Length: 420
Image (cartoon, one colour):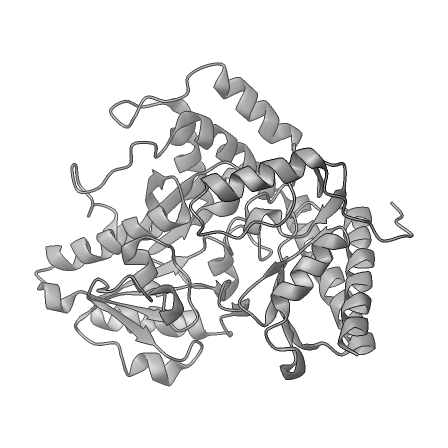
């Protein structure tokens, strides 16, 4: 796959018309790019005007098998011709098989709750943690949940409060109570000073995504496990972005050799379909009894049929091998580009979850680089104002990744030229 010249983004009349309507009709809480994505194949997507892009963002770690994966399409087609929705008043087959698979592959879970998104999975985990404490006789004042500075856990009122980034709280006050923030992620002494008999759970991402693609350092999650055990709290690991193969193992916590009490999943779980899950270990597996929580669409048979196909395929050794190999290739290429352009302070992450932090002289320019990348035919993300984020499909090919890196090199050249 060769690409000797940079792409030119041409905005056609139909695209311009649709963009104008989108800006007119949508609540203006997003800022979509000036394009209408139309279809995709593998790690390449095309807009309505025929421009092609190497997708190194996967819909923010959602389309982990790229676009139009044949196994996911087959699962979707088969189930869509059977039954679409029943509610949780009745059993259907796909969510049962998905629950069984997740429990077997997680190695710790005993029960699964299905929902529609990461925010809902974390909302369920918050409720479970509070009910777990209540069942042990803890008063409301003794049900504190601790999270870390730089975390991101969702956009509902509870999960946005759990998210320890004040910028997400502004204008939505008063925030729900009982949430405490540890200012220093990866600092054992800082978290140890906060945990006491009033702590009912610690929430942690094994790799902070929105916080800048910052991995937990070796031993940190084990330290949290020990602290939770000491006071009888739950260790809840948010793998919504880092889970389902993204970091090089099906579950990111496996790399830290720690046994969680709860793991939350979404994004890659559905391979592009909206589905989330909360996996619960033995300690809290019976907490949420009939009537304590629910989700009308949770465990939808179409969504879970596709999710089962996605998890089964991603768990295959060849996909995990590809994550390791392409992750190394991506990091090495970014490091090599940095020797030429000197834009990055650090390239970090795990597997195919990579962040390139800009040096101080280019602080705040991540969004500019992301938009310039789009114009050069490669889609990359940001993680805050200073980090360019890469989350390509886990099955991305050598040719697709090489093409994306060729185009990104042009991006950095164009950006550097504009700054001189």
